[in-house]
Picture 1 (cartoon, rainbow, N blue to C red):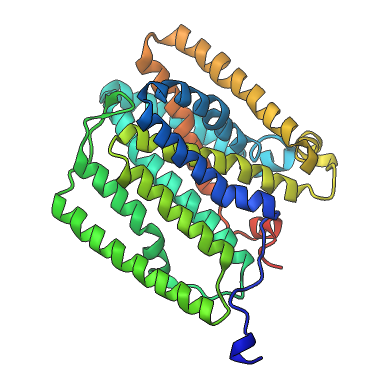
Picture 2: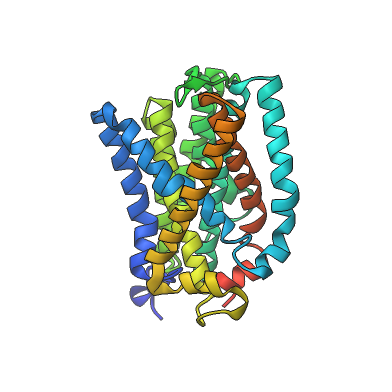
Length: 348
């Protein structure tokens, strides 16, 4: 093939379909960023939007995790310790820290842990797209990771240097970060993004550009820049990236389950496989929302009323669920594991 007829991109390799992937890659970050702009324009909308985010995405996305743990016997047999051992341990540990140190430590741990959790989820998804477009040219090794993490690291350093004192209306204590460190990180980030852009241009010229992975990386950079650098208010910035993360998780878990049960109803996981059929997205979402109501409104509300009084206890109880969810995700969503790669079609 001559240079004049050489293709300038690799063939598109969708995780699921053009409609799903473009919604996932482009639609979700645009929705999150537009929501942030709306709140900046109309600050009174923050609370209503936060409530909608929590009930329709946040709590729901935590419940989606448990569809991978205990909705069928095989999953429970594989991951029972995450429920039977880790959940009580996280509960006791979180309660002890809150009681002996104070609520601020829970808020501060959440602030840094959610940043790391959101970044790692995005990394895993980027690996999935990279695994689908295997013939493309990529950055490798330390350069690959440095490019990916540059903006998230710059963002958390900036927020720490900003030291707003409050986060979601609660006391926040940050790790002290001098301005000079933020400046160094900013220069390094600009340099790394320039290198990435140059490499992708070279890949395009060679006909080896990973189109979907490149598009995903652009939105990854954009959402972290918006959430941590562009928006001055730490809580509004958090809400932007939280909406993106939650919606991303819900759709990815549903996509994973539809691929897992693509052959129809599984007798060993009859309920989960039934609600995970492609034409039953509405039923999958409704099921997760129903469980959300039972767990968050019912169970946690009852515990709050019986054991505690006031907002502080509610926050601690919710963070117990969040912290456990973060630990569980670190175990069950490793793209490098063979079963995960097989389900996502990354070894084909």
